[in-house]
Amino acid sequence: MGLDDNLAQEAGQNTADEAIKVTDLHKSFGTLEVLKGVSLTAQKGDVVAIIGGSGSGKSTLLRCINFLETPTSGTITVSGEDVEMRADGSPANRRQLERIRTRLAMVFQAFNLWTHRTLLENVIEVPVYVLKMPRAEAIKKAKVLLDRVGLGDKAETFPSFLSGGQQQRAAIARALAVDPSVMLFDEPTSALDPELVGEVLTVIRDLAAEGRTMLLVTHEMKFAREVATHIIYLYEGRIEEQGPPDAVFGNPKSPRLQQFLKTVGW
Amino acid sequence: MELLSLSPPGWGGNLLRGLVNSLQIALGAFGMGLVIGLFGAYGKLYGGVVIRDLLGIYTTVIRAVPELVLILILYYVGTDLINKASEAMGYGRVEISGVVAGIWVLGIVQGAYSTEILRGAIQAVPKGQMEAARAYGMPAFLVMRRVTIPAMMSFAVPGLANLWLIATKDTALLAIVGFSELTLETKQAAASTRAYFTFFLAAGALYLIVTLLSGVVFGRIEKWARRGQPSLRTGQSR
Ligand SMILES: Nc1ncnc2c1ncn2[C@@H]1O[C@H](COP(=O)(O)OP(=O)(O)O)[C@@H](O)[C@H]1O
Ligand SMILES: [Mg+2]
Image 1: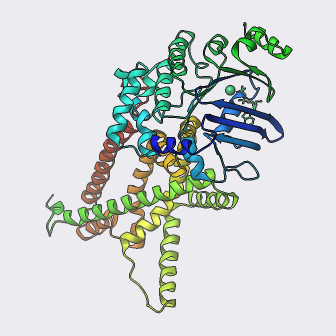
Image 2 (image 1 turned 120 degrees about the vertical axis):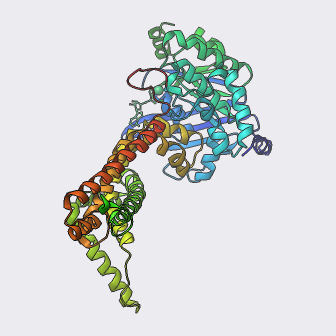
């Protein structure tokens, strides 16, 4: 699947500007219902920030979107294409899911770089082995990306020898290497020492500025207000309040959101 | 000393031939054990109830029964079954090569231990490693080949090195079914010349050399498998 195929496919869809759509998503772990009907849409270029207390279902929401968790019900639409699901929510078409996953690049809280591979190897892994890009081309591209996140001189270094901030920036380079339609960030700075948060946020801010579509779970409220086009406040598996950043942060309506913003020191 | 010379009347050549046979079997059995072990480990971790139970019985029984007994059972039962099958199909008795039988018998034993070593190693790999691979659209087999297996290597190699040494030494047990590996060749040489001390010392030296060389090889493999992990001693740079 090259970039051209993606574009061709997207051009064939009517909902050409819709990068991702989640409709009435439910997810239970056993008897615990974690998501109770969540719907959201992100147009191309949108930065949707998802905020909410611990355990409100933010990670589960992101993980259902790329089917790292199997939804209980609901639909996920990526660039106008529905992910085929069985009645029980499990993916019905493995190939389709794998193809769609390559367009959704996830950045994890714990980085999850492949520890037995150098940064360069991490960045070329998916382009070469999943997208079948020629190795030389992938390497060239990876070096540009590593440069971009300020790690051009660390290409041959293994992740464990780097700081958390450097690892997370490398993970973002890995995500960019697949030319994603949507980037999924799950608390990308929560595992970092405070002095390393800034360098990662700077990279994400640049990506937002160049019009990347992203879903961003974060506890950095100031940052969310600054970069997001839309804020979603999740409370116990439901969207309690949403809207443009200035409205949500400047004039929160729900008492729960007001309380939440107070506890995070907004 | 001339007893050990490589050409007759020396017995050195016989000992070396025995050693080659032993190593052949050890290598084959270790390799077969790894293949069984990989399937076994994945079966135990991801298989259905039936597969898990069958594998549980396999690893428990093999590890519970003394290897000498297992070798006798597997060798005689195995050759007997093959001959019965061959006769039933109208071919008459078949001559089973000692090397093949040895590999088969020891391979099944090794497979049980490999299964447990590899299962533990796979479980020791942080879940996020596989999750990242899946999230980026890798099919299951690619995840195994590109992420799980290389990432588990550093956990598996010390156990596998032990298993390999056991394999080299277990070949000696095959003497009991008349296979001319190093120990049996040594015994025959010693009995013919009555130079017991000389020959068993020589055989011991050969086993020792194999062990030492193996240590070097596995040391290299382990170092490679641990690339990317800071060493415990310095906590820093490679
Ligand atoms: N694999 C799982 N099995 C059972 N419960 C889970 C699992 N993953 C998450 N949960 C539960 O789902 C709820 C929401 O979790 P999560 O989505 O991680 O919240 P958040 O990311 O908003 O902190 C929590 O109560 C958590 O304990
Ligand atoms: Mg979370």
